[in-house]
Length: 198
Image (cartoon, rainbow, N blue to C red; front, side, top):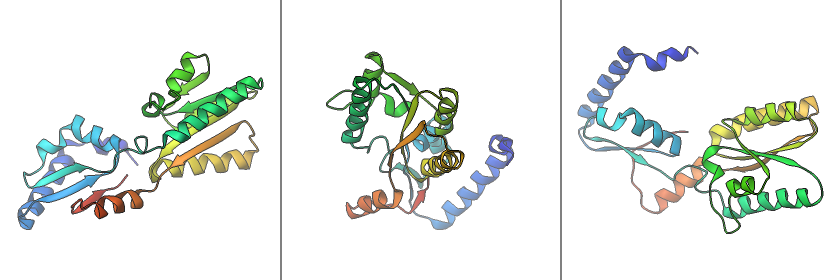
């Protein structure tokens, strides 16, 4: 797919005109909920809310999967790092930037790094995979949060790791499913007309 299409102002105007026509036709407030912090960042940075008709609202949903990752999982990964170091094994821990500073009762991944552990922030799981290919004598563990959009790339990398017999790359999966999170919101009485999927 040609990515320049996402910067086409003419196309954006046509889409906005279509949204305005539909909003007028519907004639009532329409609430669209996103379920990801990255969506909120994009909506806010791009000024999308200011471009939409007044009766079209974009609302935040259950939040990013980082926000709902149990502290116990972060603490468990930290314990794995400490135990391995005590046993003389060095692990390279990779994760996404928004997970790096999440606090728990035993600290954060940023705290681990300040203690001398090898903790690296990556943009994608593929970056972690490349580190494993380069650092063949060290175990690379990717602490992998996310909804379905990050689960698929993780599964793809895992398949490649298995197919190629790469033994120094592991995934600590804390992936979450979107439907249960949305269902919980509905049960709590959250009202919306549509979802902007991850």
